[in-house]
Image (tube, rainbow, N blue to C red; front, side, top):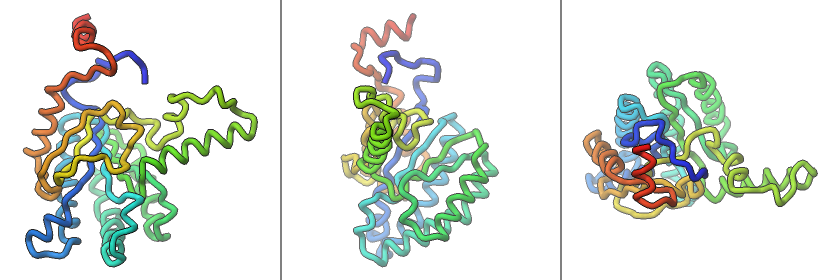
Length: 252
C-alpha cells in the first residue's frame, strides 16, 4: 500500500464495504423457525444494503455468503444453503442487472455443482459491463485460500524462470489475490455480535475500519447500516501517519 492517502473521493463515504452477514440461524431459532428461514430472511437485508450502497455512491460491496469452513455445517443445512444460493442466482440477477449492478463470485467455485457453476458464469456475463455498483459474493471463500492461491501463482512463475524470488513484494502478492482489480475495503462490518474476521479477506482488511454490531443480519436494516456508515465517517484514517500529518494533507 502506498504511503500517500487518497483524498480524491468523499472521505465520509467508503468506496468499498465488506460484510460478514452473521446471525441468520440465531434469528430464526429465536422465532422457533428452522435456520434456513433466517438465511431466506437475510436475502431481504442484502437487497436493502445493495439499494443503500447504490444511492450513497459506494462503489463496491463484498458479502461473505459461504466460507470454505461452512462445509463443516450439518449436511442438511449445507444442501439448503446451496439451494438458496442457486435460487438467488436465478431470481435476483435480472434485478441486479436492471439496477446496473455488476455481480462477481469470489472463491473456489469448482466445489459447487455444475448447475450452480453454469449460473455463476451466466450471471457474471450478463452483468459484466454494469457500472453503478460491484457486488462481490464470497462463496467457498477463505482468506488463507486466497493468499495461498496467490503465492502458488507466483511460485509457478519462479519455477518457470519468469520471476525471481527477490522480485516478490507485498504489492505483487496483492496483484494476484481475488479482487485485485478493486479498491481494498475501507469499512468492514460484522453483524451478529461476534468480533472476529473469521478468515475473511485477511490480507485486504489490513487497513480497514472495523465495525461490529450485536444486530442479527436479518434485522440489519437501512437505519442500522447508516449507523455503521456514520461511525466510519467519524473516524480518522491514518495509514501509518500521525493525526497531524493527516490533517495537513487534507488542508493542503
